[in-house]
Figure 1 (cartoon, rainbow, N blue to C red):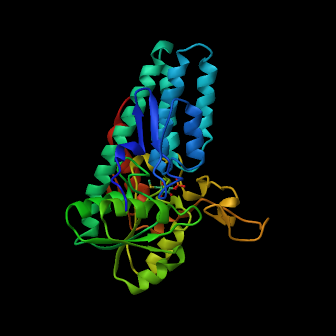
Figure 2 (figure 1 turned 90 degrees about the vertical axis):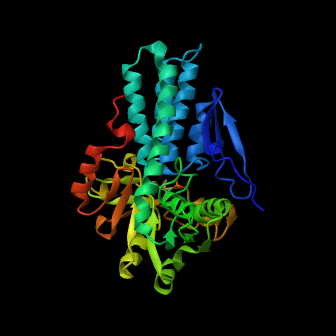
Figure 3 (figure 1 turned 120 degrees about the vertical axis):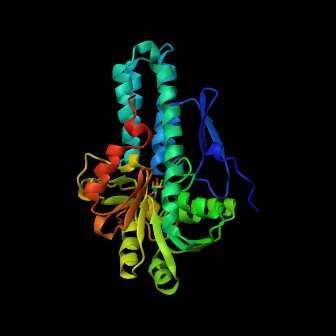
Length: 354
Ligand code: MRU
């Protein structure tokens, strides 16, 4: 039995502190932490207690607001603020939303009178959060026509309200469900850290959306034996040509979807586009600790000291992507022109002068 959860508790600023849901403990324990120490937020990002590309960026904004609050007090100078900045910048390498937020933080630090930094930093963090809420809603709206009369959606990792302020790929599913369009979701378990099994299932259950959990290797079989309407995943970084990095296993899904003539969509806010990167090969791919492969939920599943290769993300080449659902509309190939055009049109904060 699942008790209703207040989605604001995924991540929020509350009376000078940051509250966040510990996603590493889900779905077995629903624990909301509260901290006034930015270093706890850095740790939470590293340990995937806070995860999902947009949410990592939002958390860094709040974390910098915590650091800036201390900045006005004794024993905390500009060097400490720079140290906090570097700690966030080195917390996780692939999700570009983190750097998208840090770029705005940098500008603020360089351009603000010292006394105004704490208030401005908090204001920036709150605006980043609100901006993502709007983007997630827009992604849902733009993606809805692509699922048409509904049907079967296959997805990977977790792209719901735990990963962004409302969801990216799952935002389309949530909206369809809200509008009584019948959808069923096949959820990849998403080894190694099981974001599908632990988080997506939890979110879908909370909202009463029909779903079935599958092992990652079952996805092509599902595509062959069920009338899958679409495969929709999120992204952690999208290059200018549309190549998209997302949770390891996404490339395999896109390949199988092409083999079965099923549309493969990436759903992401424009803040996930890295305009400085031309193609996917330039995207840094995070490699994580070997223990994430050699054990499942802290239980060893192989021999001690087994050598492993543990990339956390892969890059899906643009030619396998049917379209990219963004807050600025659905982008179609050739992405090297549709992406720059969308960036030009912009979303909320993309166009805003901070
Ligand atoms: O390692 P994670 O759990 O942070 O990876 C998350 C994903 O790969 C999501 O699909 C991605 O961030 C986009 S959805 C918001």
